[in-house]
Length: 160
Image 1 (cartoon, one colour):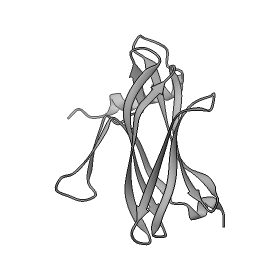
Image 2 (image 1 turned 90 degrees about the vertical axis):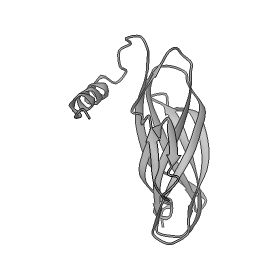
Image 3 (image 1 turned 45 degrees about the vertical axis):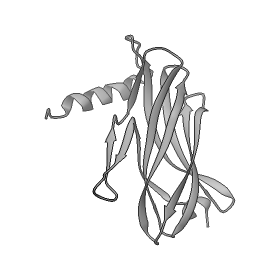
Image 4 (image 1 turned 45 degrees about the horizontal axis):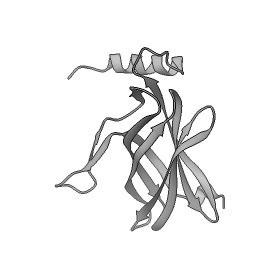
């Protein structure tokens, strides 16, 4: 059986500023500052961020994993974080919160959060979440089509 088939599945990846568990209801979380983009005042830029995952597994147990924050297109990681996903029952869905404190972005550009799980002597890439880091000044977006899509999305949201 392939490594990816025995590793847990990543259902959701959210890169955000803060995660707070509900004080009254298990399994409910408030996410603040959900990120598709990060604006830096200068470079290198140090940010305190969180990665919120929703993972599932057909088997109960504890599974180790890692998250890399990678600078593209150089394919060079700038932050490495380990985590454990625990499943008390078969076919369970579980939240995982990983602290990415001290994440230092060396320059503007395209980045990606990559989630891996260890299984049977190897590791499998189970999810990716891209985002853009730009400078505070009016620097051009490194991925123009991606940024235009974000702008269209953010301007089409209803005001509440």
